[in-house]
Image 1 (cartoon, rainbow over the protein chains, first blue to last red):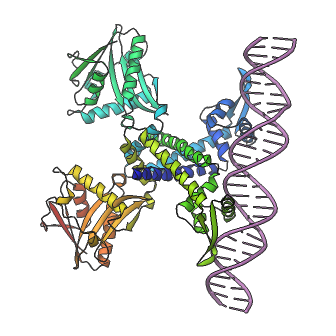
Image 2 (image 1 turned 135 degrees about the vertical axis):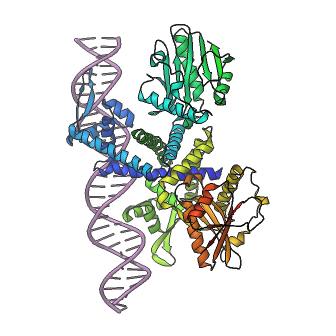
Length: 290
Length: 290
DNA sequence: AATTTTATCTGACCTAAGTCAGACAAATGA
DNA sequence: TCATTTGTCTGACTTAGGTCAGATAAAATT
């Protein structure tokens, strides 16, 4: 156990010196960290002075001075907000946008360098996802999204890959009944994503029709987030939406090669029923009355 | 690929805010970060002012002032080094030791908290080891050590566990020929550890006797360090030591359940030979003439 | 219309951190 | 022995970052 603590502290040291290098790269463009942070916040789309101040946790006096400095440098312009002229809005000038892009380039290069010098970049990424998800586990949010958006497709792709790995026969999505995206968009259904910071780490689809019966599809949780009860959260939210859409009965199909899924369904009030479709992949079928 | 970059930058954000919290905890004891860092360096055993200065990368003027401040607080005493009275040596007072212990406690608590709130602490630790090893991959060092030291035992324990997992029959070290520790200490042999920062991530033993023939034992590399050519580095160093001890012939035994090991031996000039012992576990035997 | 609240700014002030030139004393080398 | 080098310290100065008490103007409330 003491040994484990040492491992974490070694990790902190390793990452701190790397993050220190990151801070230095911010300073490397000849601008103090404070101004650089404000410039980046504006570049990332924050406009209102108050919002930026809260986001960066700055005193209003200091914030004002940093803005004035960036203005003097010609990096930003400020003006009153159209709907409340007490509030001020900051925007990048062309010069400011160039500086911001340069910061982005440095950050991306640094990230790329970490991947490039390691023989197993995928292992690095998986480890980073696990740690970032663990550190932010209290800030995981579930959002509704169009299943054709890139974040949703990211999850679905991972889901298909996992089925491919775990089914003895492999998995070809074209042989399965791929639900119409519009069946998973309100008012017929919904597609939910679990987000940790900006990374999608889980999904579930509620595929509805015109009647009171709907199907749960594509329940998946990233390996980085397993054990955090995320599947239950996703299912509960999907059931809530179903109720609000006037749906009385939910069905789903699954495969006995995914025993943790069947266990979850049984534990949360689902009953096993007879086969209700001719999809070649599933071999277990469940139903739940809301 | 762009997606991967985003994942790394998310990791940086997550870790930076956590590390920021660590810095704040340093400040939380009412001492500025600079003084706290010096106090901790002294607590961790650094004594000479110049060594501390280099380690923390401080200007000599600033260093001097920080020392003076800690002295005024009653945290440390300084005096001339006995062998060169230009150099000064800093030591903790009882009060200083108490403050240092408090910092250690805070750091350990923080680390413990991360583990405690996650359902799979072992996964967190493995991920942290992987990342810390990757970030410090250019600073991996190979050292000689007594195989009875805790760092060596850490590696050996992991090695036995891995054999237990990978051999169809399991692995019981008591049934195997456990080499005498003294056979792996100069002048008979040597035990080598690969260290990343303070974490042992690989080992190999050279078990010698009185004659010119020796055995390679216990070659192991942590999953966190695989792909970094560490096994080759360890073997090369073991062979170098063997030569310097007047050994002409090396032997080793291994098992076909560890194909990557046999592949390494074949690639580095080892020849498969007939069984030369009656250990129940190995089923492949190699020899190399130096 | 007068008062209060909100959002930002300004001036005065502070600490932490760091730089640099030179002082000083001990150790080293010619 | 004398000049040079080395390790540390001191004083003078700078920048970054931050706090706080008003000032100011727009918006919201009474």
